[in-house]
Length: 334
Image (cartoon, rainbow, N blue to C red; front, side, top):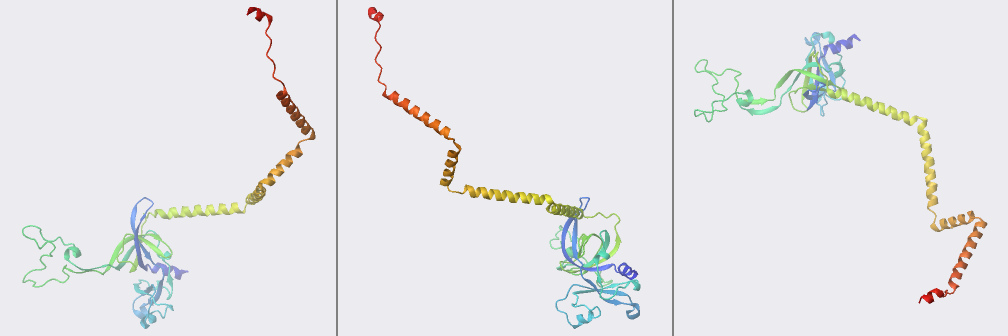
């Protein structure tokens, strides 16, 4: 137990690989630039002690080398690894008692956490041959008084006879970049099992080696906004899944399914009846109506038809009536 405590109290540095740069939002609605680092697979390849090597250090291996020669295989012989690591870095340790065992895989969650202040070391991008204005931010010469070709010139680089030379380290034009650079006091905003998110930008391009060293902690740390949002979404999703499973297992659902099956069966029977030929339907309808009518109703209907027929015939056969005779009064009046 105490050995494990001393391991992670002593090792405060971990190796990583730069993946990408993006932006995130904090809970106080502040937008920050972040760099994503891949930190999975840190293995203790070798351990240096004061008795044998006259100093205490830990040699970490990171990544996987595709083609390893005999020198690489001999380096990992003590750690009993199957493949040689791509990167090797040695970290000095102040206390020899906190040295981890060889072959141990370091977990980032036991070394770093959100809110830690770190120093990130890497190799900066190469810019090629550059002048003093771009490389050292020189102001340049004046643009007036006939100085047409001195705008980006360095100017004087030394004295005359004394000392008669240019001092070593004079800032002049030369190859820019591709140097070991350290960005100090960066902040860890998120830590997962494989990656970490660092607030700010780190030196180097994609897939380059990065060394992260823990320095202190930020007591006024503000977490990421999306962490809380994701946890709420996961909780809602779990609650919905539980409610769905409960409703599926309840007996009411069985009754609903039984009603659905009965309705489907009745619908199929109705469809089968409706699909009969039209002639059969008409015959069935006529037969049913004739069966319903009683014989008395049939006799009344036939008598009414005969009476109607006889009255119509008498009307047709009746002779035309003669004109009425004139009365005597009308004759005397004429």
